[in-house]
Image (cartoon, one colour):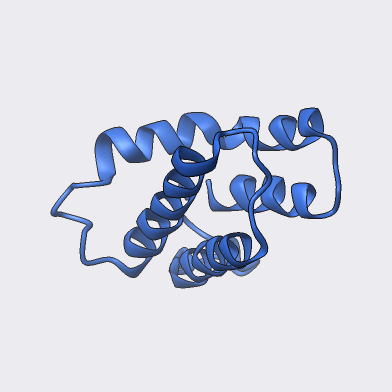
Length: 108
């Protein structure tokens, strides 16, 4: 989820067309819906740093788009903040035990 969102946000910042940005965001849509439906307020994961960072990133995106419309390009401060939260979420995911190649666990 974090990689797909970050990729679409970075594409928008680079001047990609709206269609290209939306295409890059497509893979994350179902995962975002699942996160919101199953995990956003789940007390079993609420203390996890990955959960907190993802929740904050989604909250900032939601607030921005509610205020300015979903077709509005993100402002630089919002974009930078959301990307920071997404990167922190990815960095907090533990490596899978026994994996030598450094691949990360998680649907995030």
